[in-house]
Each structure stands twice: as structure tokens, then as C-alpha cells.
Image (cartoon, rainbow over all chains, first blue to last red; front, side, top):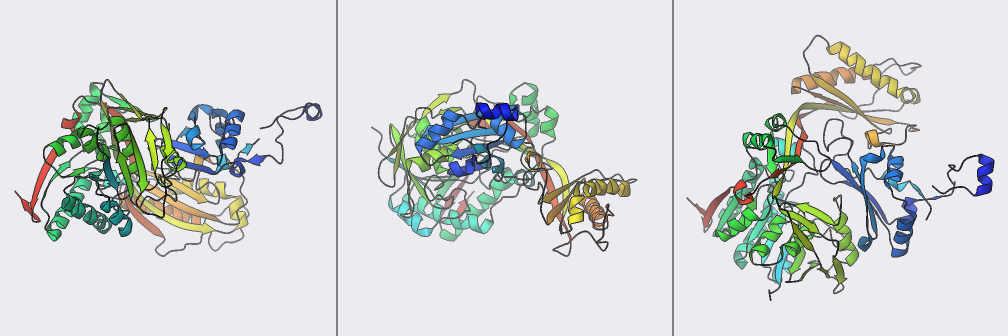
Length: 125
Length: 459
């Protein structure tokens, strides 16, 4: 989330107001997807179309344990790892599944439709 | 200098199919090995638990007919990993039956090894007591009781038992549950090719053309293994491999794309280089393998969770939708009251599409504006009869539930089907996902041999 300019901060007395026309990750990335990595983990891939955007995203640290946890409304320690893979222009985040795949209460056995909160994440790119 | 070794991978899963034209183009290149993986835990715990494959017999027979007939004609080995999907004994037996049928129909002569991977629960419980079973990733530690409570436990084999089978003269090797690359890597490793390169190549080939663009799990991919590198190229002229498509595949379904743990060690891809060799072929250098001091195999076990009955219904009433949470809590309470006095042990859940049906606990959006919702009533109980009862009570209670402000008093639910309730059968939970430390992996996975002469099985 982008911080507010100094003058605005004095007006709003906060720097946590979200900038309205911020881009979403779905407008900046070529691929945003989720999938099981074994029955107990869920792995999220963000792949960019070109090196420039990937490097910007990597420098801006848009995908962190904290930003992913905030998007999904979970504790940051449920996010196991954030890994960059420059050769594929990709950033990967791995979560602990709320339930092992297919257990009672399951909503998505393959884990292939858990990407939406990441896709809608506001990014400064 | 080792010569070029060619591996033809027809399909991501035996039974997913592949175009005949791609197959012919692959076979024309005179492969040294035909290999295909058939396994996955993706479809969930049911298939391992029930002993049923997630592919149909006729689709598997179609794929295996092409593969077996050409492997025997060319005099090359054919290796199948994770037969029948989950690789348990019933899964392996179905595949053996299909091979016997094809051999008879085509009059083929060959020796086959079937390698089983379903392990004895009491043996594993003892290993657990000795501290030889450790949890894997985010999975919990299992106890000996957890292991004894499993319906079925399989272990993922590495290359050792497959190499033994090939050395003992098998031309066809059908594996129970196998680490995905094993069926591809065993023969080249046996012939002296690098374990790192053969395993990394196997990792890519096991998904067939998913590493190509456009990607597909049901089209043929060819792998070319050299002393210092490997290359991949799709058989169909309608697809290409690019450095991006191959590298991006390395990410797929993995927690860490650089370090890929498997039986015997970890594939280290930090120093991998992907080079576009031709418009359609990518060459890969620099894969490394870090052997483990203590060898281990991955265990997958499932236990019964009971029997399920579901009912699918919908609602298009703004007042009902406004009071949805109150209705669902009320139906749960009322169902418990109406079943009290019986000894039914059950779990009742409602999946609400239009609210959080896809993401459940992970859904960040709490307020909904849907004009209609879809509801799946999910009842799981100790017997099918009891699951039917719980589902029926919950369904009729929800149909007539009197919520606050209700003005549509004829019924709250729209049912698309008659009958409204569907008995699903026995369902399972993953209950063991662990590593078993074991020094002699070849012996952990016993081999059974079959010999065919002109299609007749020799005894």
C-alpha cells in the first residue's frame, strides 16, 4: 500500500488510507494462480510478462508474508515462504492449507481457485 | 562420452490420452525408453482409500496399447509410475490386468515386473515406534495408532527397485506409487547418466507437454539426455518449448522451485541454465543432486471419514439471503434436536455458493450482494443409512425453516433434481503424509515377475 504524501497525512492524521486508483496485481501480472503443493500446502504463483515488471515487483516487495497474509485474512506464520524465480519472472508464496485436501469441510480439493485475493491485491507498479 | 538417450513421454497421466500423430512422430525418433506417470494426490484422498483409479479402464487400455505395442516392437523398456493413480495394490492389479489383456490381444512376448508399494501397517507402526517416521512439510506427526487406523498406506519408490527390475530382465515395469521422475530416470541412471540430469528431466517429462506452449497434459514430449545436459522438445509441430515455458513448469505445484526433495536426495536447481537451442527445443544445464545421508521415502496414508450424502439446492429470496447465517445455524441446531435419542455420529456442513463456497475459511469478503445462493447440504455419518437420515432431516428442516421476516412461506429451497438427496458412499481423509527413513529402498518395494510368450502368460 502506498503511503500518503506528507501534507495529506496532516489532513487525514493517518498514512493508511488506500490510494483509490491503485493498480491491481491482475493488471500487472501475466499469470496469478493457486494449486496444491501436496495435500497440506497451497502454493501461489505470480508470473510477470517481462523482466522489467518482475524486477519492479521484486524491488517493491509487493509479495511478502505480511501482504499475502493481509490479502487472505490469515496470520503471517500461515505463509511458509516467499520465493523469487527470476528465470521464470515469477514470485511464489506457499501457505498452509486451512484443511488437508479433501478433509471434511473442504471447498477446493485441487486448490486451483484460491488465487482471487492475490489477484485483487492493490500494487504500486 | 555417453550417446544421446531419448525418452518418449506420451501423456501427463496414463489414460489422459495423446494424439496418434504426435505418437508416430515420437516413435519415428527411435526412443530408448517409453515412460509415463499415472499418479497424483491432486484428486484427493478418496482414490487411495477406496482402491479405485481416477482414470477409466478403457482410456488406460487405449494409451497402454500404443505404448506397449511399440515398446515391444522397438525392443525398448517401458516404465509406468504410480499405476492406477494412487499406486495401491488394487490400483496396480487393475493395470496388470490391462497389460495381460493387451499382450493376449496383440500376441506380444516380453517379461514384466510389477513393483508394489502398499506397505504393511503393522511394520510401519513399529517403524513409527522406533522414531523412523517423521512429518513432511506442514503435515502433523503421526502416531502408531494413526498408522493402524489408516485404510491404506503407500510409499513413493525411487529408482532403486525399478533398476533392479530392469537388471533382472524386465522390459516392462509397472510401479505402484512412485516419485514422479522415477519411471523416467531409472533406466538412464542404470546406464550411467547423471542422476541429477535424469531426475530433473523426469520432473519435466512426467507432465508431458505442460512444459510446452501451448501447454497440454495430453500430448507427447520427447526428452534428450546427454552427459552434461538435457533437452526437451514437443513431438507435435503445433507446440514449442521456450525457456519461459520450461522454467515456469518448474514452479508448478511445488513449494520451492529451486530445491526439489525426493527419495535419496534433493534436486538443486539454483544454478540451472535454460537455453533456447532451436525454436522448439530447450536445453538445460547445471542441475545438481544432493544425496541424503539417511535415505527416506514419502508415505501417503488415508483413513475413512464415514459415509456422505449430499443435497444440492438454491435460494433466490433477498430476505432469506439476508438471514442466511441465522438460518444455517438454526438448521444445524434443529437437525441435532430431531436426531437426538439415536446414536448417529455425524458431521453436518453447508457449502454456500454466492457467499464463501469456493474459499471457505480463506474467503476475505464477508458481505455479499448475491441475488441468489447455491447451497450444498453435506452430511457425513458413520453409515450410509445414517448419512441419508441426517441429510434428509437437514434438507426438510431448511426447506420449511421459519426465519425472521419470512414472507415466502411455501418453501425456502429450489431443488434442481428429483431425487434431491445423493448418497456419495464412503469418504476419506489424508491422515499420514510423512517420511519413512529406510536404508534398503529396493527391498521395501517387492517385485513380481510375469512372462508372456506370443500373448500367453507363462507360469
